[in-house]
Image (cartoon, rainbow, N blue to C red):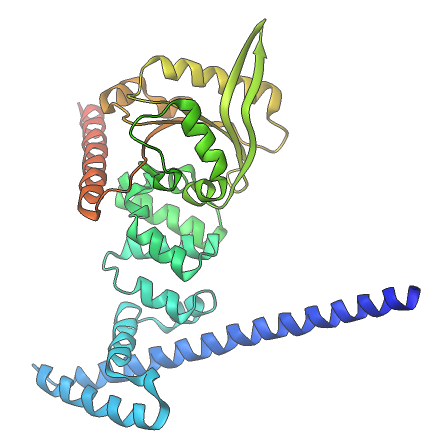
Length: 349
């Protein structure tokens, strides 16, 4: 019996070593290929840059190259792929950055991100992908759902965005502005036109994995209808989460309809209770997130919820078209920029 157990342990340890080695080999092969593709793209770009107005020559040389390379080395060197390599080298001209990038992202991940023209947006997706270890499919979904534009950081000044991304990249420090979104897309809940707060909560719990994916992978579910007693009155927090990197509790309140001013007092009560009775040493102050179908921008602005560590966001139970989502998000960004401009003018007055 002991020999069987000893053999089983031996087998599992050796199996683990083999699997780790295979994984490491796959990463090494991927990084080597990605660097090769970058070098090929850079070399072609260098060749073409020698000829002014050489678009016609460029087409000819790429067409000749891909035929010869594909004949010798296969379809990995098709014309389409050669142009991707050229784009890769153009978007990331610094070899040191490329070497760092290919250690953590596969070639397929890189193909997803290189079409993004905005440098800050591209950097955001790269750093979040590295942090949350997104699959290629999740990576595409995040970009398609306009995650960057829906994240609070996109509504900040450009210098603030750069600083936040540098902290994330160099020190793995993440701020609430990189975590919380507006709106949240909850189309996976399958809710009909008419539903209650209880229906919303029940659907979220039934699809908890999808909900956490939308929130972000560092959210850990703690409780539903968390009961707290203040004096002799019982209150119930709809959903309670813990965020690993922010190191704080996150209380989520679900509301049907428009945001109302009274929601602030309710959430402040929850947060002060959590801070006093639930927060442990080493944790940061709890954050409140109020999800409602419409957040009434002026109410939110006048109530200065950020000073109370409260965030308000819309949720969408149906995924709108890309154009509608883009319009909604861009309107939110413009409103945020207008508010910041007003604050700057008030300081100067």
